[in-house]
Image 1 (tube, rainbow, N blue to C red):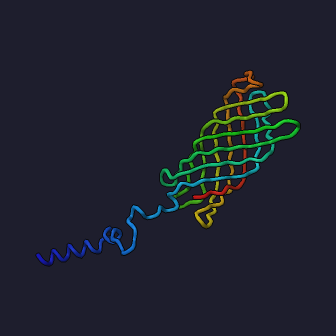
Image 2 (image 1 turned 135 degrees about the vertical axis):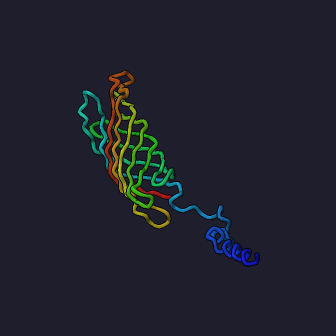
Image 3 (image 1 turned 60 degrees about the vertical axis):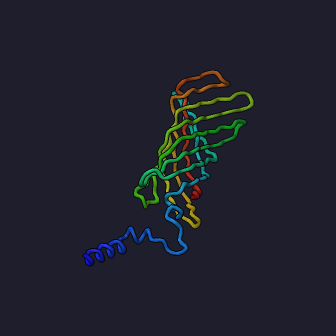
Length: 200
């Protein structure tokens, strides 16, 4: 009986769970331990070159170069998947007019593996193309999706430098000139490539 008691006590003392749960002097409870960096919410700001365009059945879909960028927030969802929200924008001016694209949408970041730094991005939301001058304003608002790729070069202080490429495409939305409907089949496109800074 004494031998059985000694064996059971020894097994309990050397079990991994007991070792992990044992509190050392001055240590914090497990609930108070900081979360791993991979489980933290991250915030991203990107600046890029871009080409935006108005699209429709009778448009030439010619993209104009301009400055573009994105802002986003991402949080872990499942293994190798992050769920977030992203806003993409583009600006171009010249010839007495200005053009812009703005799109906002929920996005998924899909990584090749939980330890991978490369990811594929996809999302669906709303986008708007605007062209304005002193005399008139043309707008097209449409259901828009985004696809893209990126790679995280991890830096100190839980930061990452992220080169990225993304494409926003919208279709089947109202196009209006000074408020009057032109066509219900308007859309937009935005191709951008640049570098973002992500902070956890």
